[in-house]
Amino acid sequence: MTFRVRAALLALLLAAAAPATAQEITLPQTRTHVLRSAVNGEDYHLAVALPMGYRAADTTRYPVLYVLDGGAHLPLLASMFRLTNRGGRGDVLLVGVGYYPPGAFPRAVPGQTPRRNVDYSPPRPAGARDTAPLPWPARAPDFHRILKEEILPFVERTYRTTGDRALHGHSLGGLFATYVLFEDPDLFARYAIVSPSYWWDGGSAFAREAAFRATRTSLPKQVFLGVGGLEGPDQVAGMWRMTAALCAGRRAGAYAGLTITAEVIPDEHHGSATLFGRPLRAFYPPYATDGARADPCVSR
Image 1: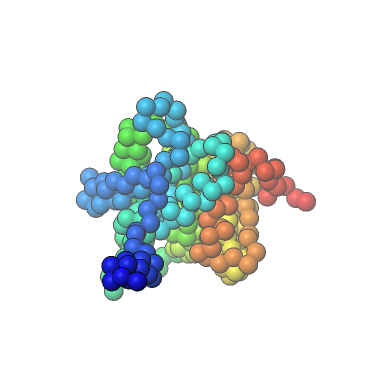
Image 2: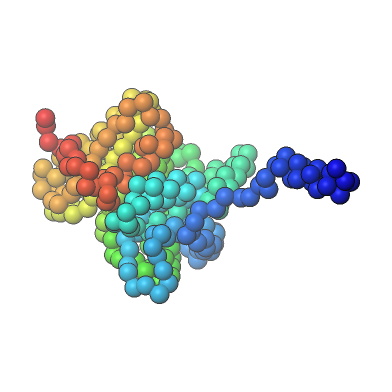
């Protein structure tokens, strides 16, 4: 065997043994934007996961699901939706609204309240019984304005959307979604309220619901309420308490047209991926065609 042949064989062996070049994974058909708010001067990272069939030359318009905590949750929800919607039915444009790019997961600054806590926390409503100082500033009204006046208009002039909007919030994000439902219900057609933090401010969300109910005769919206069975009795009880309040409002004629889905998912915890995907099943095909969901307001 000549030296040249030996060298060629050695090169082939070394190439076969060399590790593959590492490449960063990206979410296909996804765009990112940074929007600086005129309301509070802060930057918001928007991650827009387009339907896989979305094309610039097309004219099709799509419903939109706005996902709070978008840096963490948008990749998960977009992947779930795409995996189970490969037939192309009921495509939805998903918009993650967050504070950093998807997947970055920066560490919180010690001693500093995360800005999402401030944005998602409602102020104390009239009629709330708790008078203890709040643990951090409650600026949900400002973030509501940012969504309504800046983020939604930006998305709707940049992408082809319909008027069918949904809001997905988890934990404090679920509390904020509840706040918007009672403060500005027509901003969205569907509200996904996942593991909501109804402990906030001594349960003041229930006082807000009572005041809201007194002003209504209809509420033609879809509302999903869900919690993991391992989250503890207080978290589960809070979700059922809000479900019962919405059912009572519908029976009283205040919330005519309201569709409610409420679930406790056994063996799931506060950050369960299974729990995050349940609103997709309630709101969109092909999940919605899997069969009728039981109405939690009807005794069985």
